[in-house]
Image 1 (tube, rainbow, N blue to C red):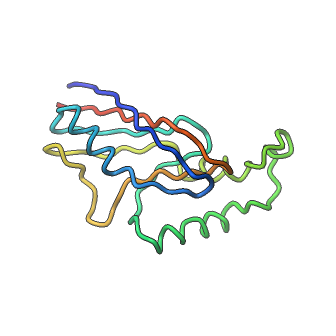
Image 2 (cartoon, rainbow, N blue to C red):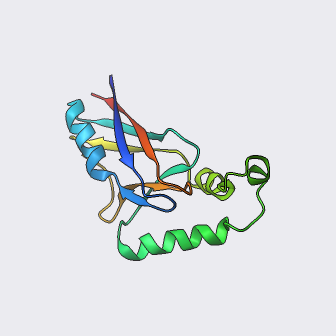
Length: 139
């Protein structure tokens, strides 16, 4: 069993910017030279999230609308009352989606479904420079 850690750098354009990381994760697995195992991804920060979706225009529009219904920007957030930084909803949304995910790989290939991509979602109100940790475990 081997463990290889890689960083994936992303530059977001701010709130609800979504980036397909599938190619970056595949590259990290290739570079690790591991054939079978699991890759775990983690966002360093409390206002970013990871998920899988079909990365297409309709869902890129639908997901922000759904997040607004679940955790509206204009709702009252204690975080906002305490820090006055305008991103209480960002923290709640990121917590609901989550900061990490794991995907198995077999023969060097991710086991994603046909219409499934690994996606980073920026939920903070401003653009961010982020390092995502990819920890690849396998043989």
